[in-house]
Image 1: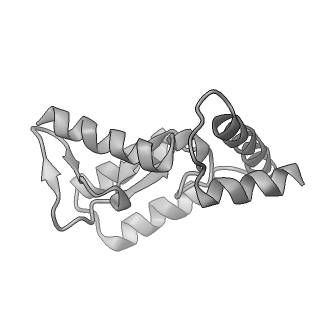
Image 2 (image 1 turned 120 degrees about the vertical axis):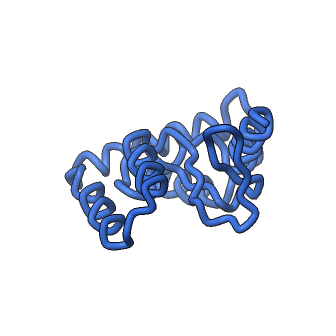
Image 3 (image 1 turned 30 degrees about the vertical axis):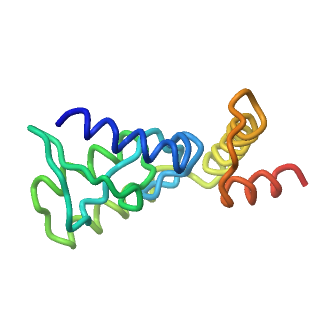
Length: 134
């Protein structure tokens, strides 16, 4: 079953690209991992992890937000507590550092799209690339 978990994450990476090309959906920083949103009615599990084979149920997150998000779901936290954690994550970075992260992400996207990996870019990548290059 561990192979199914790995295959699910590989499918997300193949469809959306590496998480590092995206912004964390919680703190707006640089994402590092694809996080399962725990909302799939056909959720699958292996011995210790829950995952989905549907790529629509994954969100880009930084490692810190991903750990917090998964912990809150394991503990079956109340919506108020999840909202508090979400608000704390949003306060983590000042605007200047978020702008610098966005510039670095745009460079990574540009490198990924026209670099050695000649993969068809996603619409989001094209928009970010055009905005930076113009």
